[in-house]
Image (cartoon, rainbow, N blue to C red; front, side, top):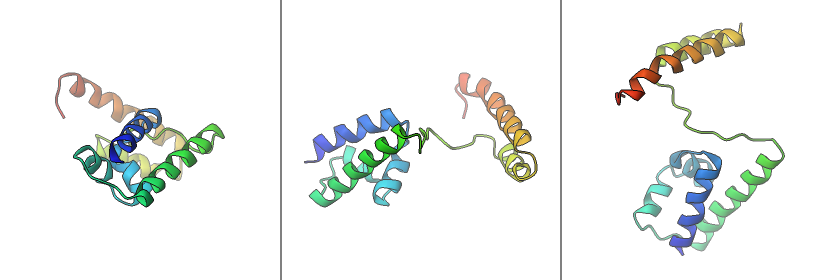
Amino acid sequence: MSAPLLARVEGFLVESGMPQTVFGRLALRDPRFVGDLRRGRETSKRTARRAETYMHRWRAQFERGEVQKLGDRRCKEPRLADEALRLAGRDPMKAIELLRIAIESIQPLAKAGRP
């Protein structure tokens, strides 16, 4: 049962741009779910149904424009992110600009292979 489910979940992760831990947490309240599936975890029919239901609901909501692709939501520059969040209440455009600067500041590091 797990192999076909794993294939469908893997496809969903690519389609949604969702990290595996986010999927596990949102669908089943288990951030290790996908990793465990990859290592051969067997699931019950109920668990598989819950995962399938989540994927179907997400797709329907995405088609209606109610949700967006999540992607990796971690920020690599926490000081700028904290400042952006602090300013967001007063000036959302400034918060967006600070986050853009944070992203640009880590791009050279990422290209150089540094964390």
